[in-house]
Image (cartoon, rainbow over all chains, first blue to last red; front, side, top):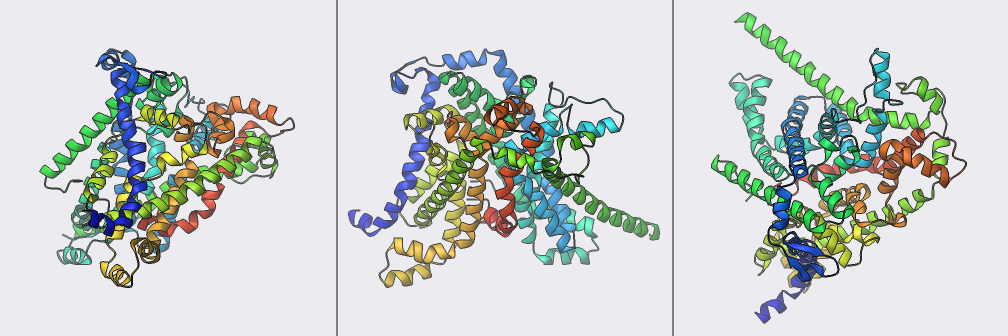
Length: 298
Length: 296
């Protein structure tokens, strides 16, 4: 054993930072989850604080605002999944039909761009463009003879705005993995399909689409693990005091009660709840996909 | 039969034009907002109010850009963001290489335990508050390191990199081994050069992530002097910029530009570095995402 360690000492030395990092920044916070079962007090620390069992959970499940946050989070991520997940697939299939290489490259270049722009910037653009007093969107509406719309005020437009902006930002970028999968399809399959008299539409339906199903499944499984998450950054930049009733999701809620409000135990409880549901979701989807004969993540 | 084939043809050419039309519209939608922001940042506010839909300004003024650079926070924001991006990315890449190489050795004892440990973090996390508590206990709050150390290694990237290194033939290393090189030399002399495409794409991804990140900054920093650029921008654009406009005015008495135009100029100033390197990043996108497949 000692001889083995000595022989491989450099490899093990290289692994030290990695192990230290994951223990410190991932496993120590997992231990911090104990806060959810304690009445956490800063001066006493995690170990010194009093155990309260499941009191924090009981409190959480008895809270109306918790259910509202739950509903908001799920509604938003389901809407995003339903409307946003298919979009990159559709775009990739369309790009695959484009024969003109320059056109294809230009489209790709431009549609990847929003992915590289921070949500702060996008939030700034949206709130300004949608402003009822000086925004360009309302300027257009006015020219068309319509009344100005208060997009950011009130709860009515929040969900559409979130879904549309997330599609706008990431659908283009999302095509990359599908396009990579499409390039690896053997040309023989297309030839065989053509010999059978399949047109472009049929080829897409019976050759391209089935070939990217494994990619779709993998990405779908990964996506289900985030069913409880909506991305703190996007929601935060679009959130304001008037749309709070529909815009408060788990991340922003945890931030508000925990970091801003200082209720660490309760916020940890909410965080733990979402982590556990996320993990269960990903395990279930993985199992289902294996049952259906697709390869899972593990 | 004939009617059918004619129908098929019309349908397919309709489909073709539909595809082009849709792609053009989608592309325009991705590009237009940015073009408008550039245009607005150069348009005098009075002109803008007269015709907000004009893409090409009649009169051009650089006043807004002159004004934002009177804002002290902008400088410290740039400085912090550049520091975080450069140091953070360098650390990301160094740790990625140093960790991925030993993990790519299938026969290394303990490797599977460490891999499992890494993979589990992708499934479950302690959440925001325990993470905050940890950073606080490490006395990193209100330091730029709070925005670098907690994200030093990405589990996802590590797995991808490990797969990439695994695909390098062992024979290359073996000959170096015979020449008496140890693993550290092999890693930097032989493996690293072969990983350059992967390193390039990870560098881009990490740098952009550092540049754009403000989630960590919101949670881990309260002092304005350590704010990265994105938080400075947030201050200026949040809630319609009303609060920041006043803030702005007090920061510099001679600001003459409207808050709206300032915001537009500020947006351009903060995305400019990314937009400038964007054309050169392109060819690394695909390698970056498809290294070693999506799967472990």
